[in-house]
Amino acid sequence: MINYLKESTFAVNDVIQKAWSITKKHYFSIATLCFLMFITASASSLMAFFIKDVSKALSVIMVIIFVLLYFTINLSLFKYIFHLMDDEENDVKIVDTLPTRQQIIRFLVATLYFVGCILGVYLVVILIAFPFIYTGINVSIVKNVAISVGIIAIFITWLRISFFPFFIIDKGATPFDSIKLSLATTKGNFTKILLLLVVLGGGYLIYLLLNYLQWPLVAFIVNILSSFIIVPLSSVALTVAYRKISSEYKGDEHPDILHNIV
Image (cartoon, rainbow, N blue to C red; front, side, top):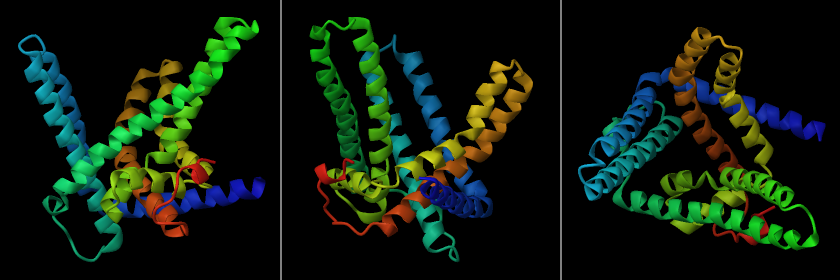
């Protein structure tokens, strides 16, 4: 177990170092795409708030438009990072990395599968917990345990299948295949991915700690630095991590789900 944790730590260090090298060299272009995603998300919330009393139909339409725009920029960011990893010598314009219509459609369909998997996992936990109500155990205890187990199960499921956009962009995978490939390639890599997320989320954890200690000015500075450094670095690091685990994957191109759950 100790050796496995050491190997996981070294693997995370390799990913962070590679991601930092790419981010440092192409910071402004990567940060620009991250900033566009932030602006799009903020504009969507503002537009929905201001026009919700004018027309609910218009509000829904605007939300859909902004969601599509957000996803387009997000996929474009991934494509741009892939280019930087595969062809660092030649420059590429951001506009040339826009996802195709097929990629956007596949991503949207895969997102529905993604949400379905999350809800399905929680439903299974509820169904398993339901019979315990009739065993005489306090209902509140059963409920609290079910919620706790459900949250953990959802987090693990989210982590295992969250790499699906990369397979759509990088491998041209279909929506369902992208979910299955994410599940298959993350099998045996859960600890590494979890450690990576802990490292990348370190800035936010420090921000929460400083807020708890009632150091608002220092917390604000840490949050600003985190937003301008950690967010772009995180996008690159997750892409580098995907490329690493997918290159090590030796399984079937169309894996089944049951053999890759655990």
